[in-house]
Length: 350
Image 1 (cartoon, rainbow, N blue to C red):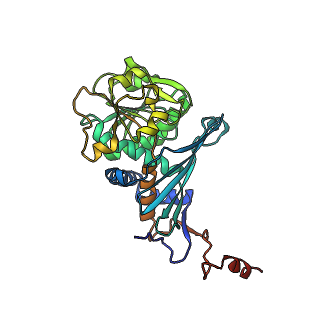
Image 2 (tube, rainbow, N blue to C red):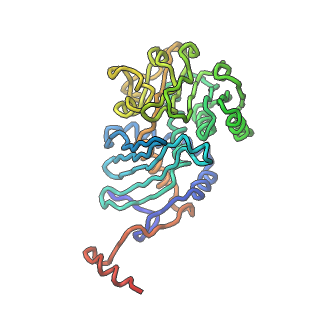
Image 3 (cartoon, rainbow, N blue to C red):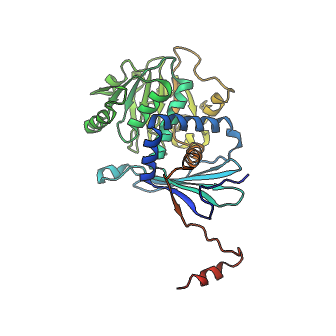
């Protein structure tokens, strides 16, 4: 089965940053978050069909550049993404990304798209999808610790997918909290700005940590976390970067995307190699249990995995059909005679 593009020629649809923003407003951000969660959930249910490999990372003293590839046998996708925490102080994004989807049968690309905004959406959608299975029943209050670029997306995804009513914000940079609170005004969620992380987690059933500094940090100490909560740990995403005290992990049932990657990059890099975890896809596919009791602490140790990006690419490919939210790029050399690439070059001579 081959994949088709919106073009009838060898042109590749490209979704720019402006295209992506207009598409989001056209669909509605909460609807798009629900849609993306649905696509991720569908792909997690067929997890075993996918090629799986930890992301290919190139580390430097100032950050990391990564490629995240996967394929389901019919389509192939990858994301290019960087992580440079120092960029914020220079007025630059910490994370930027773009992605490509290709047809396995021909090898031809069928979509090229920005993924800086799309990654924020798919990360938030995946968090809320996990919370649907792992958070306490009726959870409606979240502590959002780390109020940077992800915080509004995380909040709106929890609202759209599990019915979040209130978010309690904390960041060591008060300006980040002010920014997040301002952006969330009028979007249907009660916003409470807090002075300390302890204040933020008071009364919250979901604790989300999302900080950017590449260090072994302790955003949540063991004594801060009581029974019955769901922890959504999304800030740790590379070796040498964590947010939770190891004691919290010891008391929690930990759920991960792909253990060989998470043991290198996630919170569980602090734990012994045989530390027990459950793969989230097994819960979604009905093979393992998620939340089993009121006093259980569940922890989604999320580092982001290529299948989630694949789901997002697949969704964008489907949604741009029949719209004007893309441009066509002449990326593929396509001579009339496939053996005469040189002749095509010569005929283009002015």
